[in-house]
Image (cartoon, rainbow, N blue to C red):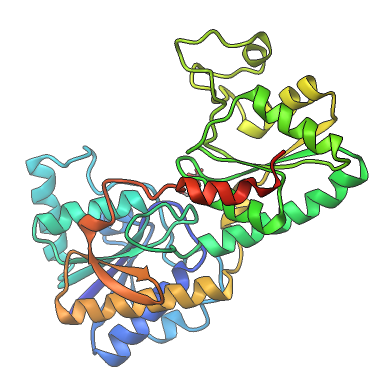
Length: 351
Ligand code: F6P
């Protein structure tokens, strides 16, 4: 059997360990020939490949990034794929002599995997994203690493913030789901955790920060990049301060990050000196945690086993302590967002 491996979407710590797990199981145990496509779908279309065998994956688990490269290039220029595009894709697939393809990626990639599986292509998905917002799996690899980096940032910001009696606002990644903010905030004992799922008004946020000050403490606010300030939909008249801060009609910043908008507003409404830090891509860089390496390795092994069994159209999902092969349809089509009871856990320090 000839098995391809392709990574798509943003990188996520643990991708190398996933490739290694799949290759060691696929090549050494099942006797597959394996090949990796460089830079996602670009490598597939341009025939830019590397052979994957034991020497190719030696020592890669602790490494950040991904040895094959990744990109957000879609498989088809048009979203759903025209008839001609599907035909060209099938011809490419045949040219590569593939009996199966492992797709390592997040929501977008697994949605593509399902589209391919629905058309009869032999694919298996491996879920990765630092955002942890993919449904059907308890955790995605990369998330634990991102959370540990963000938690360290919380700890560090706390000491400098308290020394100056300042409010510190830390922006972490998470456009649609607030998992990183939630976990980093709970781990670091943040006073406020603000996530896309639960908009709050600027007045409420300022009141919470003032209450913390009245209790003699400094606030540490963790905000996910996709957080929206409540009460600022397109029909509402935004307050003068909010307009000056450059928010759009949906309470999101027109330029820069949400932390850079929140900090001056908090300072203006509370009189507390406030500073913003945007953590950005630091969260995706560097060596994966042991948890992510183990999870990714197990996902790779399960995907190679799925290929051997012909269990196409599935994704290697973590459910409890087991890696289960679930239908791709159970993973895509909706995001795994933070449920209200989990948000409540982060509110222990509010007010
Ligand atoms: O999906 C992972 C993620 O890191 C998001 O948290 C973030 O919004 C986005 O990717 C950033 O994308 P890029 O690396 O393309 O700027």
